[in-house]
View 1 (spheres, rainbow, N blue to C red):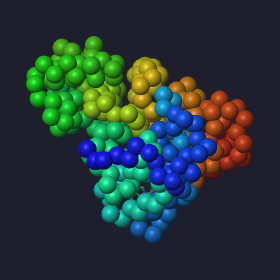
View 2 (cartoon, rainbow, N blue to C red):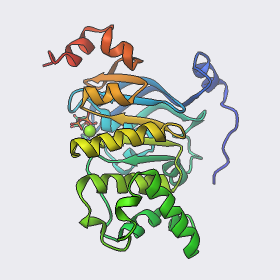
View 3 (tube, rainbow, N blue to C red):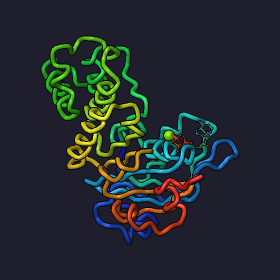
Length: 271
Ligand SMILES: Nc1ncnc2c1ncn2[C@@H]1O[C@H](COP(=O)(O)OP(=O)(O)OP(=O)(O)O)[C@@H](O)[C@H]1O
Ligand SMILES: [Mg+2]
């Protein structure tokens, strides 16, 4: 583990001055470009602990790019340039001393398409635990079980833990990758359109799961489904063309949007 500064420095302090105490992620003046093309401009957004924030906006506006900035997945693409600040618990995650491996453990991500490894159900969930050095059979069993229970999948798979994960249905695979993310006990969960391929019942299960998880996690969820954003989130951020257009309590944003662009989008007059 890297040395983590327990106190933000002066600059960070001044940026955090007006924030509620429970802010866990603070995005400040974030700009992202791929080669010369700017895809995110001056994003400022804070995520609060034990709250769900929904990120909505038209396809291509930069939602997934923003998520990838929060666990530095964009580092893997050398054409991508990120400037600005992302503070996680007051720590600048783009600072040179940041340990990216532990950052990605702290900031878990579930992608739009379920991406289980071609391994057994058990090994999928145990994967990150083994990397962390959990090796005794009983510890692994206990933690795999807990993660599957937390992801509301245990009852459906308890009798076939050693079957291939690829034999699960889409919705089950989605919950499996959530279990895999939960196993390493992240503090922040990024969910990129996690319900886009789910049937209505699986979608409802996932929404119930998010409601339970928010007690222990800070959650950012990308969704194209406005009803879903309204159901699961406390705050909503609307993005358009690489900008954060509006951020508000979900009930306010959907009933009394302040920006014309937001209103056009949520009422379907966009484009
Ligand atoms: N690896 C990349 N290289 C070049 N351009 C990229 C890359 N990834 C994303 N982009 C561009 O960045 C912009 C934002 O893409 P992003 O995937 O973040 O959008 P999105 O809001 O998640 O869209 P969707 O709702 O369709 O998932 C798009 O114009 C896209 O073409
Ligand atoms: Mg996307």
